[in-house]
Length: 331
Picture 1 (cartoon, helix red, strand yellow):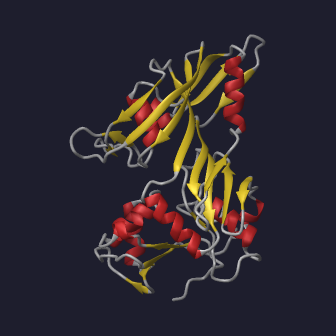
Picture 2 (tube, helix red, strand yellow):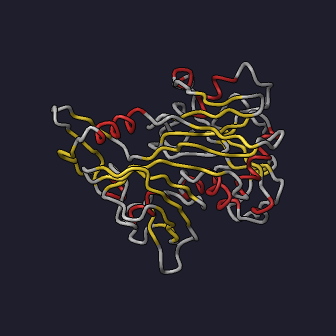
Picture 3 (cartoon, helix red, strand yellow):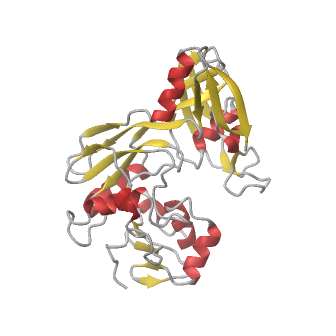
């Protein structure tokens, strides 16, 4: 079946040389980390995952240069929801577009989020501009409640160039995070392997694994500001890109992100200043502040910077005014 460019939830990925001879189900998981293994197997069983136009089994070995199509399309109720999603564009030219993603927005269709995603919004922005058969593709992804820089490509050549660069860890990512407690060292590295939480109580939860069940994971950190209320603003630079890496590593240091229910135990931070003014943060405090990468066309260095999201900016302003935590709500 031909690829339908009018359905942004038909995801297409090209197999890179480093992924040569990877199992099909593992390749899909690597390309769409938020999709569960059960859902991947279901799509494969329903012939909704194709390699070069043909449905294949889960254990099929993909080859470098193969095009893998993941059919995620569903009936069209609410299909125009992407029209109503605002986009904060921070960089754009003929090949790429970078946006400052708002917290709470899912980046691509998955699960119950079929139409209300960043990819849908980009599709509606460019549906009458880009030529047929040239869908927008995401070059990087952020978790739903992480705000900040997301880069997308507008043509196949740009997608291929950036995919190769990301595989080779050429782009440099910088995040800002508000952590609980006063981080002692001004800077340092966290070099701890990460894998699925062996307890199995939460299938989305990751953990530091010292039993051989994790993958190499490295994060660099630097303190930006310490607050009397017992919080620290840090700059984080992930060298590797494991799921929930920054959240897991900071929790392993004893400084989980503020309002991080999964790794810090509470899902809401409420501050009150001396005037009684309350400020609330209802998602974990993580922002993708900048992405430095080589332009896919002329290979010049580009830095896309995303201003801090309003909820985190307000929290930092409250802390600088001397606000203190007045209560938290358990998840």
